[in-house]
Length: 354
Image 1 (cartoon, helix red, strand yellow):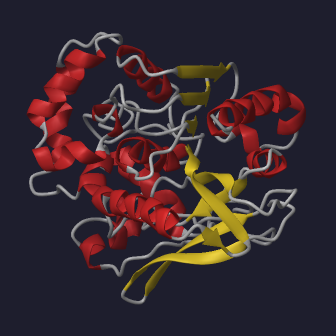
Image 2: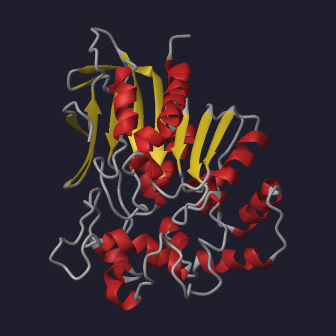
């Protein structure tokens, strides 16, 4: 967690459900509006909140650079879908535009950047397309969304061997409340804190919050996109799976995206980041571990290719031998401090005064 105590602010209310942001002030607190980095947490879109898998290295460097760091909640799947998440991202930026004073921090709404880790990159990519005010830069940390149409996401049949960070395969019967149609009847939530079994458990250190396993189960079954799009009847995953049987060249992203647009109902297009890339996107920095088995590096490689095709200024750093969430591991500062400094310089260049 960051050193400073944040101000917690409600940015959206949906009935009884409150969506919050935590605002970390700059280390030197000037009496003027400051730029801000908006961060979206990971968790497979099914678990977590604004304090989960928190990138202390990024928060500290952001605030030391004279910027505010804003960590945001958003609605989780299930029962929400990508459409709800997109709505939350748009509403958050509208809130920042209309509410420049957050706690004790004045935000310069003309100088915003956005970052997302893992599934949180969906939100960062959404902001690049839909947010108003538009962010000046996007930082994706091992981000999901650059290529959703792979065997990792759309298995032609349920996986039969461990594939996700070495974790065991899951029994769908143990997660019936998170499987359609039961999942659709859940009350909307925007927070689900990660939790782990204690030392007295037969499985110490393993996830005890069932939501921590839900995205993995959907990937195991090849149905993640059903829940992301809300298209279960018929299953959009089953429809798209047929595309995996077609010959595919890794550099033919435009051809693949054209096929996807034809195969997908128009309602799904706005929530699939790989279909959103355009020359209007701000500069993007992508960071990914080469050995990531939760979000394979192909996601960032494919996004990088699409950004280059669109003539978007982009930086791509692949960390050889590193896995998922490598920046949060013990010793990460010593191992990756230079990369972390490069990331903040990327953001500083975008957020500094013109």
